[in-house]
View (cartoon, chains in turn blue, orange):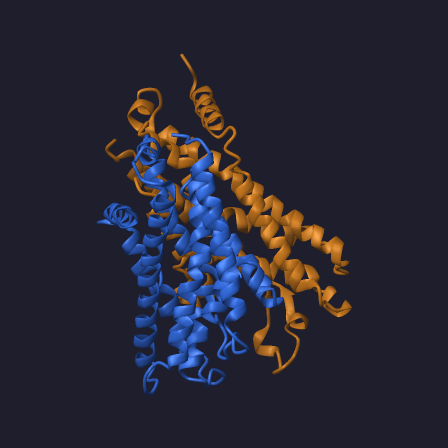
Length: 243
Length: 261
């Protein structure tokens, strides 16, 4: 049943401009970060790691979460239009599958975005003349950033489901990212979903901020994931639709 | 027969009624709270010496943060207000009652209200932070007025772009992406040569910043707050920017009026 729901959600994304956003938005931090790196070679001496700090500086801190917010808003926008809520809720499928299918699709698009960021990072590194291949550790950071999207993705899906506006949840995600940036600098990364994402991506850091162990990161991620998924499914079960 | 003024007034009132209970003011208010929080965190470790240049520092930081926040905030506001016509496919019905040009202008004015709320709010945030942290620099009216004018004018030009994109796009992804991309460009335009950054409208928050730092005079390792000073406001440049903004608005309005509904 869940697979069928995922297939239906995938159909909704066919020929949509979400893919254009997914390809075009990461291009900007990649180009800008590379220029910044090239302009400061005197102080940025850790090669691949330094390039990573420049590319992720603004991408992870400010734009990764709004990008996920954009995907989530798009998926729910289709349901908010016309009388689609009625159609959605009268489908003979459990509501949890409706939500989880959307989550799976958001996760797939995010995974594609992260892969694209990885490819861009590699290409920019080569254009800058960096030797060898991308360090394996950075690939782990990319993967961790993708996992962290599960926390923000569920939260954003919840917000986009409850708020009928397309734009407001994206604005909230930017505000959340900024708060996340502040909390992350204060050492409270584990307690705010948008900061967990920064932690996962190891944004703007050339040394691994999770070198003491992955467990607190994974626990925090699981708690946020269960909390927002549970809240969303509860909301879908208990609240009447506003079509 | 209604005069143009009363027709405009009725159209504006209609826009006001559409916004009832939509709580759009929460968007600029939320961004103002985040700005205040951000600034408070940065100012916590200020020394008495830093506080002697406190307002200059705030103006400098805010012009940088505005480049990040304001494009997305305006994209959200414009999208929220324009989406109601697009979602409901009400253009056809609307144009039997109202001229497209007038609708475009009044909708824009309704959005500008929230921009002004933000600009005034930002000034109040500066004054509030000054009071809270005990900034010892005397308050000068001119930089405050210049900052308010700069944020409002640059914001209005950006809003006009978002306004057009939101009204033209059936799918609100495009205007939101434009807002996000604008934030990126605005931020990075500060690192570009002046001749390039002049062409990036999102970067004008820093071009019209009322305070700056003399990087050239600053020795390595020195505290940059000591090298902060008020800049001469580029009045001819600002007027030219306003004129270009008005021209851009008229072109955008022309594009919108030609849209098939």
